[in-house]
Length: 163
Image (cartoon, rainbow, N blue to C red; front, side, top):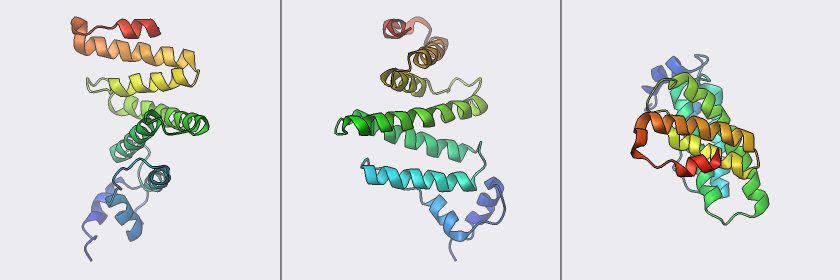
């Protein structure tokens, strides 16, 4: 049966070595993204299934969370949500974003690829949600990283207005 070769990979990264085949298939066929609310539900469910299989600090789990974060972003920016839905998704994105920050701190602490755009996006969401002090912290961290990478090549005026 064709899914056998995946077993060993999964066993290496799974919390326990007793994996059921349908979990493996579920994990291998990660869904393609479309941005309807139904597909977001499916996506969240997929993430929670993957969370049960993978180690908390697994890179695969990080990537899956990133994907969902950007799905939220896209949905929030697409303006066809009503205010309640918007606030709901902003809060979900912020919650997920905070988990992602913890993960990035583990995997990318001193890496130049620390996701500056993500930090900036998350800061934006916090600002929109009215959490000014958290937004400020995140903008500061992002600004620091942008400057480390780009020095004076960039215009940081927009950042300074937010600090």
